[in-house]
Amino acid sequence: MKKNIEIRSYYKGDKRKYKKIYEIAVSFSYFLDREDIYDQILKKNIKGAHSDQIKNILLIKARELGFKSEKQGLFRNYSINYRPDYFRPLGKGGIILEVERGRTVNNNNDLLDFWKCHICKEANHLILIVPKHVSHTRNIYKKVKERLAFFFEKKNYTNVESVHIIGY
Image 1 (cartoon, rainbow, N blue to C red):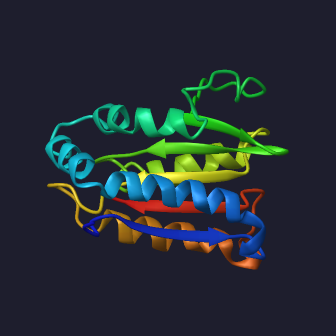
Image 2 (cartoon, one colour):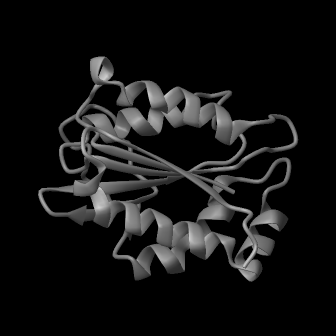
């Protein structure tokens, strides 16, 4: 198998208690790294493409892992109409899965996705799938890793217990 996909995980406290979430994130990374899937992603990761085109490639794997597409009602206690790309309940919480493309860093969508996970009462874990590069922005994956790492320094803890960033 090629190694085109990268993954970086951050945890609040002892990472051993988040083994199940990590296994789910790794399962996504292996799926994305399959040659047939990665080739599909490369064809869709072009200027002007929408993240929905990448999400559609992930849909089969997301469903297989128990995620529901655009779960409504997670933000009903707020005056905003956000929906995650995918959501999976897990124990006393859940996992938000977000798929980004070209506007990840320039529009702060990585921080918005983290914030959505932070305010969502049903979610306490985030899997964020981002491009490594797009035509107009380099080093997206690297920048997202650097930005979200700050939330996993003890002085900056939030109620988000883990983040898994997958770079395609």
